[in-house]
Amino acid sequence: MIHLVWLVPVLPLAGFLILGLGRNNLSKALTGLMGSGVILASFVISLLIFLEVKQEGFVPVTVSLSEFINAGKLQIPFAFQVDQLSTLFLLIITGVGFLIHVYSTSYMHEEEAPHFARYFAYLNLFVFSMLLLVLGANYVIMFIGWEGVGLCSYLLIGFWFKNLEYGNAAKKAFIMNRIGDLGFLIAVFWMINQFGSVTFGEVFAKAQGTPIAVLTGITLLLFVGATGKSAQIPLYTWLPDAMAGPTPVSALIHAATMVTAGIYMIARSNILYTLSPVTQTVVALTGLATAILAASIALKQNDIKKVLAYSTVSQLGYMFIGLGVGAYTGAVFHVMTHAFFKALLFLGAGSVIHAMGGEQDIRKMGGLKAYMPVTRWTFLLACLAIAGIPPFSGFFSKDEILSAAYAKNPVYYAIGVAGALMTAFYMFRLYATTFLGDFRGTAHQKDHLHESPSAITIPLIVLAALSVTGGLIGMPEVFVKNGHLLEHFLEPVFAASYKIQQAEPAPASKELTLMAISVGVALLGALYAWSRFRKKPDLAEATGFGKVLANKWYVDEIYNAIIVKPLDALASFFNSFFEKNVIDGLVNGVGRAVRYGSRQIRLMQSGQVGGYVLLMVIGMVVLFLVQIFFKK
Image (cartoon, rainbow, N blue to C red; front, side, top):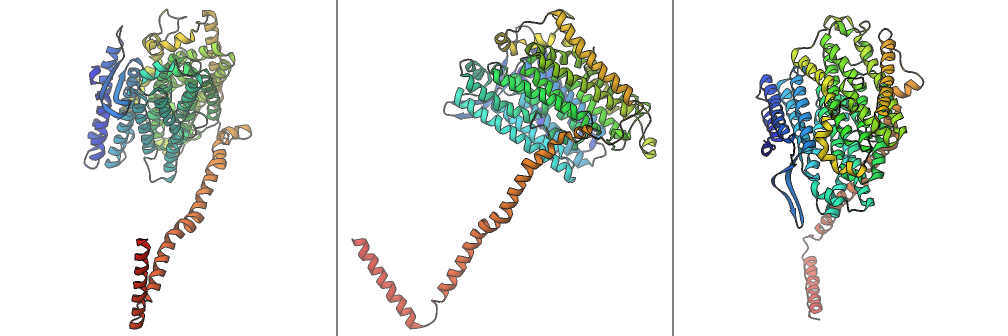
């Protein structure tokens, strides 16, 4: 099946073209069937490829489709790389993506047929772009997919384009990602200059003989791109605003596509980062800062989707901690488990919003467990998973990262545990305020409360099962000998980096102690939030330091003050002065000069014969002088 890997991205691309071009003629039923069907077909092919790749002795395969760039010595083929890492991401993208498509058939059913088809066309294009990103056998093909997911995020965040606020959120996401993408692009040109190639195999082979300063520069620039796509400090503020799009879009962005792009890129480039210790430290510190900052903001958010958005930023921080300390398998493991429980959380939030008639403020909810049992129980399981409570999936991936962080620097571990405490607290604050206690909405909302239809609840149940059991493929050595199946599967991808690092495994007693501390802290946070908010939700406006957190540390206001407003002032200057007085003045001046000149020349046409004779004589003299001048 590997030779048919090109079908995996082509099927969603075909879905995009058919749905986009035929949006005015396709019924909703056919649109939903086609939009979801092409993703299911891609998932089936990906699964068959995975079964081949997981066999012992598998050697990575490069499937070259055509020549893409041929300029002198630079050869860049349009090729796909099929190995353990790309195959794992194919399953995540198409598997979770398919569930989100099915969910969308019900969630977006109120949209008019052309917009319904437009929505699914965008979703298909989004999945295609992400598949292209993870399949590319070189950085140029990866960059094409990289830009594609940026475009699709703009289209989907601003899907309801008549709403100015949603349009601004889409522009914000697009522009902030372009800032990061510039770093990626410069790194690609630097690679071409340094290595004469952008193909992964050739770049990684030549990297080990490259000066550390050069590798540090390249990897830092790549990391700038990752901070944009994966919403790390300072380019993270677009992601919470991305909640302007439909809720299934939020699930797709946060769980299966865009925000995992930066993690994938660094995991794919692991040998470059292992050879660049300075960059690794920068990655780890950025992840730590982002994890703590975003978690602190989530403590005081009241919009159900904003809580989850800042939760995603924080969890991405943990993935970067893993990458920064060299725990590449742990970071990818957390990408996988996070895809399960974060998709479940967003789709659960969408189910709640659907039942509440569009209401997103958790202070106006409460008591929903009686009306939405499936949503309630699946949401609870997701909260347990993200909080890192055993035996749920998040426990295994989070603790693998924290254990590696401790081995690198105990301070990293302490900060990571503090983030875990806040994670457990804000997630169970969200759960208790939404589902427990008394209902606080309007009488009209209460009369219409109901469990969501099966197209919504079935994906929730499937994702809940994955959130509960997904961590079992990464059982630590202290629990089951050779139980970390994912580590064994990904070993060929990270073998060179792990050989350089030569990290000694922690003693079993120490690993168990670290687990006990992190789990104990998470349980304290969860139990305190449960007891604190199940009967007395936090309904009052935040004050004091809580107001700082509620206003997101005023980072957006700071950005507006030091970046947006100066740029607006500069643009206003160019518009009001430079454009009108210089550009318009120059263009209009040419017109005035021509008009003035023609008016003066017109005066020569006086109708007097004497004047014409004089001009004739002057012309003869001029011609005579020119002739004499050229003869000399």
